[in-house]
Length: 83
Length: 192
Image 1 (tube, each protein chain N blue to C red):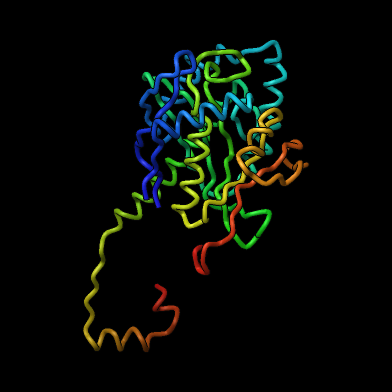
Image 2 (image 1 turned 45 degrees about the vertical axis):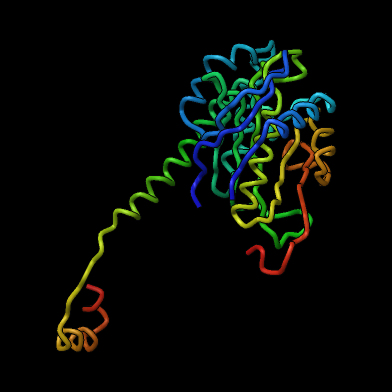
């Protein structure tokens, strides 16, 4: 899927905006404080990105156990297994 | 799915009707800087003090209690920010069919020189391109093109003529009127 606005579509949008004669805005009027909203969102999105990249950095762990070790683990008391 | 990368769009210069190529890009620190260096001065009014108190209240209503993931986008043309939009891609559901998720337009603003009510001669098609993009993201994210928005007083006519459904005033959002782009599922299993 691709987002595309052609010149013809842009002209139609411009004509529509002029006809309706009102400004396209949404949400509250943040006035001179819109920068704070931008900063809030950037902080939110960057923390999500950090979390995503940390997830990507997790190494692959390979554990090799012999059948006797597996058996020991399975038979060990619950408290031992958690330690 | 990750936030979208740069996309080429077209804007129309109001003064002579020429078409200009612009970039729709993810929100970045540059846009905050553009706001401070270019937008702010033109937005300053005699009610600045009121705006300060408004900020405190609005922060409580729209940011502190906000749910869901945010995405931010801006349109750049001639090296400056022409418009910005913040959407929430989770945590919001259709008012018409609450079983369906939608993309919620948290905030959308165009540069002061692009606003019709200021009589300025900047660019046209900035706001509507951003809204179209919100709809595109809704489709891309499996929300079937459903988009919700709270309209500022004065922009209501715009949303009605865009074919959005009037959901009435919302007492929890300072009595802003809620609009929704809704359409029926095309086929079963289209969405989550």
